[in-house]
Amino acid sequence: MDVPPVSYPLLETIASPADLRRLPAAKLTDLAQELRQFLIQSVATRGGHFAAGLGTVELTIALHYVFNTPDDRLVWDVGHQAYPHKVLTGRRDKLHTIKQDAGLAPFPTRSESEYDTFGVGHSSTSISAALGMARLSAWPSRQRNAARIVESSQSSATVP
Image 1 (cartoon, helix red, strand yellow):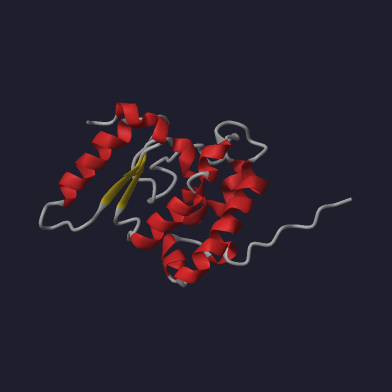
Image 2 (cartoon, rainbow, N blue to C red):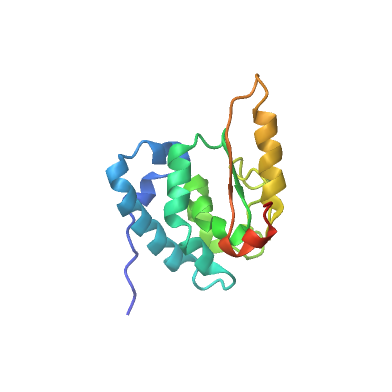
C-alpha cells in the first residue's frame, strides 16, 4: 500500500526567511509542527545527529522571524542543529539529499547558501566567529546583528 504524500501548507509557502517574516505570529506554532514533521519525513533515514535539529525547530523559526537574515548573522555552533535552518532558507526541496553524493552538506556551508554565515561542523567555533562578526558590525557603516546558537553540551567550551 502506498503512503499518500504529506502536505505542509504553511511550510510550502516558505522559500526564504522573508516569507517566514510575512506570517502572522499566531501561525508560527503551526509552522513549527509542520517543520518538525517534515524533518522526520525527510531526514530520519539519513542517520547521524538527526534529533538535534528537532530540538531547534522553534528556536530557528524565532531567530529567522526576529532577525533580518541574511544581513543579520546566525552562527551555528554545531552543524547538525541547523537542519531546520536549511529548510527555512530555501533548501527544503533538497533536504532529502543530505549526506548523499552531490547532496546538501549536513552542516552550514557558506558555498551552499548566503544564510550560512560560517562553515561549521562541531562545537565551540561559533564563539569567536560571532564575536568577530559582531565587532565588524559595530562599525558605523555596518548595522547588523550577530547571534550564535550553542548546543547545551558545549557550554563547557564557552568563555566564562
